[in-house]
Image 1 (cartoon, rainbow, N blue to C red):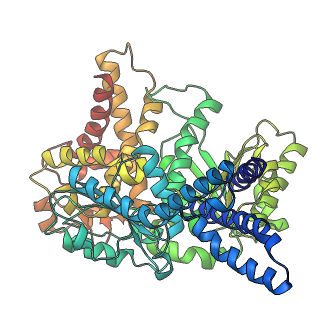
Image 2 (cartoon, rainbow, N blue to C red):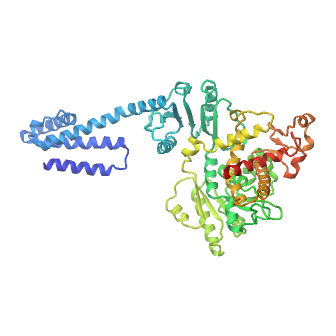
Length: 584
């Protein structure tokens, strides 16, 4: 009995030590513990029969050979003549059988369950990516839908043996994406930029597999400045930067910041901030570019400032002229945009601090996003100390630090400071609602259908190209701004509501113009429209990214349109559709 108690105590201790390890590792090490416990059990039981050193060594070898037999229901229990030892052998054998079943049958059972789910639920979610990223997303899917049939498609050769607790699929897409199923493929970030070619393969497959959905991560510049078409699949294209910043802006809306600071100025019927939202960007990386442009899009409302501008930004980095050149090629309007100023100063130098220090009292937000996480934290802490010396503890700007790696205590200290926030670039932005449910697409699709119902025809959602799809999604993402601008409409008369709707329509046009500028479009002057374009009421040249509607609100009536006021009515309808739906 004493031996059984010692064994069980040791088993509990080993299990406690391995409690945070993977199931596979726990199984291997616990089997090893059983093996090493049984060897001395046999050895000391038979040792009295040995008389020479050679016999002792021979016994040790025999015990090492006998131990596996004892772990598989083949123990010689008569040798011990003790019920407690018999029970010990039984426990060890059961555990060994369980481990073998887990190791050899788990994948088969998982695969079988997934295949049955694909048949019974007519659904499959195929996750293609590096093992670490795929594991994060699969865990997120399981939290929201335990029984979702999920397949893993490895991106790299070294990921083929990864055990993600779902079947690994290495066949061609056509082998497992069958017609009649609800097929969703998620292409996670790929450092080798192969997702574009995978998109083309899946679009071709979409000819024979109707309703195929694909969520794909692409390079941020490609997503922002290129227009891709996947006419045979329902494609939703995203970037890591876009998801990260969109989530941040949802939690820290520029308009909400201005509303809290400037009160409720509603002289025109909607909220008019007292001054523009002001941003300083330290370090000009791809993350900084997307943060700058999305914040500008999100802050494209007017203000009570003399120039009516709703947004101002200062960008600071060493060699800024060279670093901003590619952006100016893609988005020429930014090269002469008065809302954005550029300062050539290396982050962390005296010149860079001077560029921010003079504006500390008026800035709303500072983004620090150099590629060096430690430098980002150092700059942030210095700016906080500078704010305190100037008596700005309560009014200093929100300081946003980009984290590309875990920084432990340094990040913890900063997180306790008022107004300090992180962009956790080292954490994957893989959420079920964004990548699987694609929550904004239904509303964006409805918006597009409403638009084409007011024209002489149009293309369906899958054929309009990613640029127009994302433009419709941007309208949906802007809904919180419109709700804040409008305020509480309860108790408003019909005339008062109409006034507010038209003010919001003007805002929507301004927001749309900003969106076009940040995606590389420029104004097509009215005088340069050809007679044919005027006759067809064509206001844009998509290939050249020129649009005649990129003019102030009051100039829209001078452009060719089906009927007077139609161009303004599109903006008005976007607004009324939102608020009438809210009211119902």
